[in-house]
Every structure is written in C-alpha cells, then in structure tokens.
Amino acid sequence: MTDVDANLHLAQDPTADALLSSDPFALLTGMLLDQQFPMEHAFAGPAKILARFGTLEPGAIAAAEPVAFADLCATPPAIHRYGRSMAGRLQALAAHVCEHYDGDAERIWTTAKGTPELLARLEALPGFGAQKARIFASLLGKQLGVRPRGWREAIGPYAAPGTFRSVADVVDPESLAKVRAFKKQAKAAAKSAAAEG
Image 1 (tube, one colour):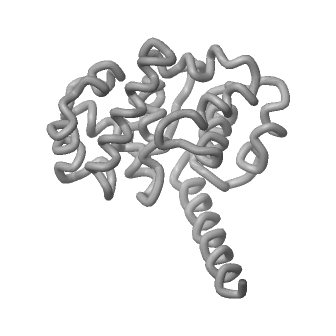
Image 2 (cartoon, rainbow, N blue to C red):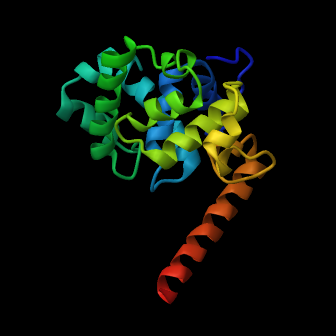
C-alpha cells in the first residue's frame, strides 16, 4: 500500500480491515462492492472472498470458472446483496487490472501522473464511474497519502477536509455513523427534490 502505516477501519472488523490496509486489490474490491449495500459489509467482502477462494490475486479471480465463483460469492453470508452479479463485476475488474496494470492494482495510483490521470484510470475500471472514482481517489488522498498537486480541487467535495460524506472519511464507528447520517440526509433531500420537480 502507498502509506506503509495505513490502518484502515472501513469494515469495522480487525481481520477485514487488516486485509484492506495491506492489499490494494482488496481495497479496490471493497470499493466495487460499496453500492446498494451497507458500507462496512461491502468492505468486509474481500476477506470473505479470500477465506473462501484462497487468494485475492487478480489473475486467479479473472481466470476462475464464472458459475463456481458466483456460487462462492453468493454463499451466505454473501459478499453483497447481489452476490452473483457482483461476482461477475469483480472478475471483470480483476481482468482489467491484469490487462492494464500487470495484476498490480496499486499501480493504478502509484504510476498516475497527477489527479486527472488517476481519476480517468479509476473511471475506466469496470463497476466504477465518475462518483465512485472521486470517492476512491479521496480515500487514497485522505487515508493513504496519495495526494498529487491540486488533488482536493480536482476531486471536489469528497476530498474536502473535515467532512463526513463518504467512505473516505470513515476512521472509526463514530465517523461511520456520521457518514451514514449524511447519506441518509442526502437521499431524503434528493427524494424531496424529485417529488417537487
């Protein structure tokens, strides 16, 4: 990991968080799973996969037999509410990392020449997109020390200091509760705006 002292607390589970802190592809996998599912359960997913599959090596995941891998991911407790479809996305993500970064997920951010390139690389990942790319880049900046010149300005609100908007701001149970409250409020505001429109 870029910051050798990385001590993430995204899953709120010591074993899962130790894996996220030491394995870049595990962290990328947790970010992929962080949608339509409680954040801490999403980031616990990589540890479940490692325990069941035996490795998080992107080449092995990409090469896994799709139905068997989907079964593994959907077995209770599943890695996600939509375990089977997420298994397919995870295999696509692993294949992308193998094809473009020689199986080394950390190269996505360690070899990027600035924040614009980093965001472009993240947006190109299967299962990501503009918002998820910005959240992940913010996580890299705030908790792993990946801070190219002008990173906060390029990333936008998720990179703002002292906020509790996303997983990038989760460092303990209290901050997780604050992020959850922010998301709930934002969702309610969006729903209200849609009703008025």
